[in-house]
Image (cartoon, rainbow, N blue to C red; front, side, top):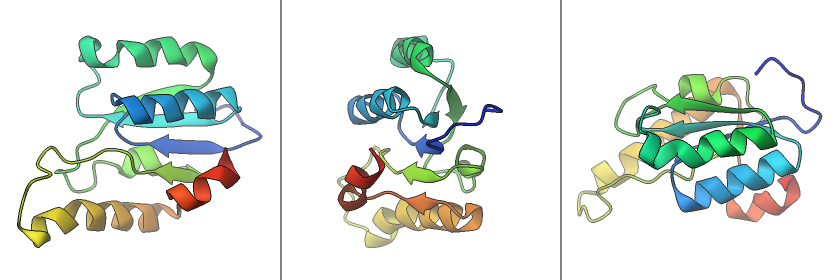
Length: 127
């Protein structure tokens, strides 16, 4: 992502998902450069749509996993905004510590990289 974008660079996690894909498309159409994360970038069945979206603008697909500490560091580095769209597979857990782990890990990465996290309330200001 060496090109300079007037709007900036956004990280969107969970790029293989429906909501993240729609957000990526919208950001690219608005002139943002986008980095997205998927668990397996080589899975063409899940990620072929991302290759098509690359025609709209600068889109980088990176490997990251919510269960791996620090795996989002590269994706968030150099970004102006970050959208946490990825969700852990085990949403049914009763263990609050497990539920909170992913969110804590994400906030640590975001803070270490100095990136503004975008929540639904702030999203309208960006896009």
